[in-house]
Length: 350
Image (cartoon, rainbow, N blue to C red; front, side, top):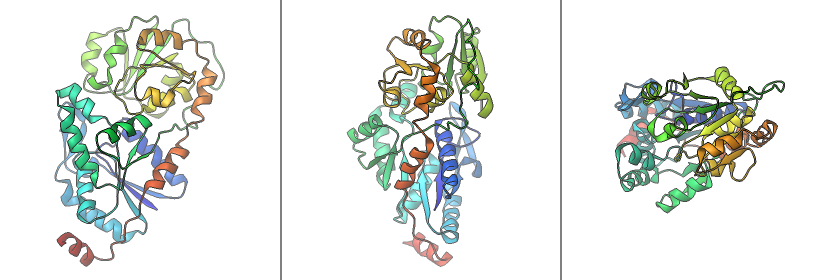
């Protein structure tokens, strides 16, 4: 099968949506499937207000429609997955709905909560948009039971599970155990933005050093406010792995993430986790012994120092991308092949 993923979030962005698509496509290709990502890099775009690294595609439908028509003419067993609710995802959704084609969507981001936190936009308005957007999909893929229940409560009921995983071949502990430093290192990895609640981590009274790996609209402001914190910017691949390994605890201050890929990545590198007992950490880590979940985030971070790093690795090895990708693949529905330009013109006129 060839899976076409249409997404408003793609490289050079570094976030959970991008990394989920990358990891899933790697696993699909290992299984013999073909993948194509259609992202904003292929369209005229403008920076998203407040998030300049995010590009919003302009006039996407005019180019996207013939592109998808060509894919349907040249390949058998093509499926379309719409990953995001932005302008490019909306154009792909409208393409499928207008032609009565099956497609899947995903719910990666808790936009109602984010938009309320950032712009005071009532959640009811955002949920109304989400209901319309996802209504035409064969299924809406959700990462956790809590997210699934949340969507059902807001009348988005055609949901199925697509959990997340970690590449344990890439994220690995130190080759040999080494003594931890006398000064503990507390790490945050993720977007540096208001909705991630990074200031809750930066404000903690902790011994040792605080390190932040990530980029975002709040980065420069937080650098000025917290000169003692080491800000590394966005990291990829080997550099990120080294930072995970060097840390003593990953502190995850977000209260709104749907999953939190960094939780599993840190654990795969042997680094325990401290977080609030909220959606995301509760769903991913539950009552396991490799994390401390506490409303007192400082207490959680200090207690996490005592967690055995080998147990962290053992936990991560039970959460593979292979299993998550099987869930994703099971939801995909092949499209009827488009035989000619004449067929495409008839469908557009219908």
